Amino acid sequence: MNIQALLAEETISITKLRSQLAKVLQRPGPVAVLSNNETAGYVINAEVFARLVAAAEKGEPGIRAQFQPTSARLREITGRSAELLANASPEQLDEFEAH
Image 1: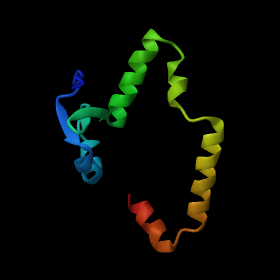
Image 2: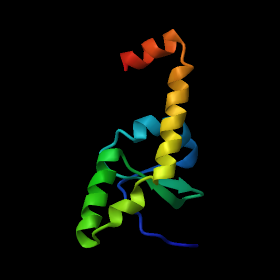
Image 3: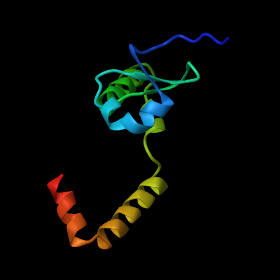
Image 4: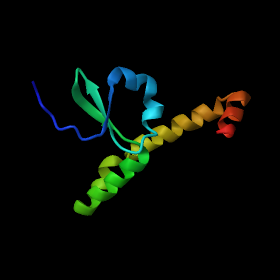
């Protein structure tokens, strides 16, 4: 049996995570994701992630670049976004504006 340190107060199974991801992302701290009762990973919200990156950068300047998309990936994202907007129906655009 592999014993791992659990670095979160809350846990969730991978199965439950699939149906509750939005709810889990609202939690203020990390949530350990378990697979077969072993820690498979952690889920954290954007605010916690930003704080972790800021803390890591204090100890290792430049580490932030490892967490940012490359310029090629940014071009891909913006190109896909432009395509989706160009092909969106009026109903979809109304729904987008409502959020």
